Every structure is written in structure tokens, then in C-alpha cells.
Image: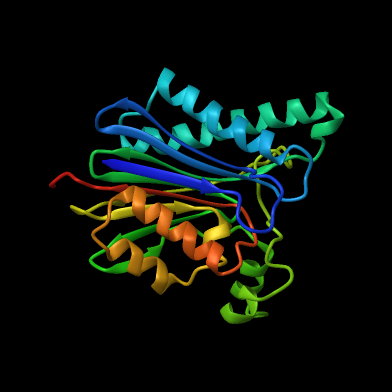
Length: 245
């Protein structure tokens, strides 16, 4: 599985509170993770940094080797990371209220085990079709599900930055975890809302459908987000399945 990623401060923010990295336990066993420090909260960048670093540390120490154990691993390790963030916040006034979203995947051969909390997203690009594979934990998404807002109204709502779940905000950091088979040349895209709120799905799909390198595709997606206003930090990660089934 080939992976590339890139992060950018955007056009409107004074610092980049996004963090991204990938970690290998074996050639066919990889963890990819993005965290977006909760906007406006003290220490959001610290929460995001700690989340990525801690998950990477746990993974390189003891990586799960099956889909079933990977799902359990995510639930267990995110609980540990949540405790770590809460303890750090309680011991330092400057960090009170800090938190972070997270979207991550453990890539085992042709399978992606994807975990998320908050509104950072995962997509799969398969045979020219882009499919969102995570559900936003956000206020506007709850309103859409309840029929109180349309998708279009939600996209332009002043409340669309309010998340309903995050790491470090409470003792209950409930994540969603699902697994997806990847066909040959399928692409897994993870991103912060700095991309998903600024760039339409058809534009994202057009970039992923191109023949550029994964590094160039990451750069192109960030350029699109910035050209649309770059209202937030923007981070993208693309993993492409280069294995035959």
C-alpha cells in the first residue's frame, strides 16, 4: 500500500492544528492517522500531536494483525489516548478544554480498518466513484438525519463547525470502526474538514482519477481548498492499494 500525505495552514488561520503521519509494523501492515485540534480550544495542536504520536507508538509496539483485532485495538487505544489528553489538560491550565478529531486506518493487505471521531473524514475511490465511508459526528449532521436541515443547508450553516464527539473533551470518546476491502488501485482518502467543507466531491474525485503521483494529488487537493478560500487548516492523506487480490 503506497501512501502520501500533506498538511497546510490554509488562508485564514494563524497556526496549523492538524497533524498527520503513517507508521509501519510490516510491509503489509500500516497505520495512517489524521487529527484536527478542536478549533478555538486551548492546546488543540497539542491534543492532535499527542493523538497521532501515541497511536503511532502503540502501533509500532504491538500492531494488530487481523481485522477483528484491529477493530478492538482502535477502541482500546483511543480510550487510552483520551485518558492521556484529559490528564494533560487537568494538569495544565493552558490545556483546559483541548481536544481533537481523528480519522485513522489500519491497512492489512487489501483491507482498511477505518476509525473516526469528530468530523474528519474517510473516503474510498473505487472505479471512478468516490464514497464517503465515515459519518460526521457533528451538530449539522444530526440535524440532517432528523430532517431539520437539508444537506445543502447544512453545508452553509453557521453551526457546521460544531462537533458532537472528540478525543479529550469527555471521559467518553466513542469512535466508529468499520472495515472495507480495497480493490487493486483503489484509493483511501483521509482528510480534515478543511478539505471536505471547501471542495466538492466531484472535484475531489477528478483529482483522484488523474495519473499524477499520490504526492501531487495531495498537493492538488490542498490547492483546491485554498483556492476556495482556505478557511481552515487542510490535511489530506491518500493510500493506494497496489496489491492484487
